[in-house]
Length: 218
Image (cartoon, rainbow, N blue to C red; front, side, top):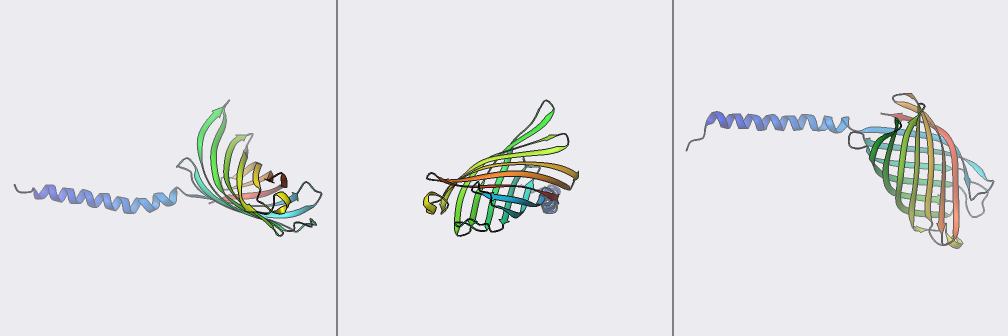
């Protein structure tokens, strides 16, 4: 049985068109779905519930896919000046997280989103350090033009020296709140408060900070 040459040509043409469409649209679609959020802030940091306050600077970069339930990865870093704690010193934090939203709804016409995140954090405080992994819950809403964000989380201490007798890791319990005001669609200013409590076998190191900054979207 002979093949119909017209049908063969039509099939080849369709395959070629599909291949061209995939090659042309895939990079464009991939680039179009990515959003970059850059955040910078200045704050005042306080450790161990003492009266030792020091200036702090922080940076973060978040890469999100807003058309895929806001899947994202984020890298955060912050550095606080040295204080007078004989067991401490300068403080620095480096963390990386990935997350996604599972809820988009409205309550009394107020929008509400909720999501989960998981990641890793490294803390150094003078000669002390802590490595931890874990995750938590992230909530966001918008009221009177302000974008309000809250996070609670818990990270399990893998290794470190911030716990009992400065000889064991600490489990990190995180509380964070932020209020942002959009200046335009690509720029906003924000203020925040944060507390992290590293608990290791009864001993604890508490880090608190509050400050202001800006966020730019690309």
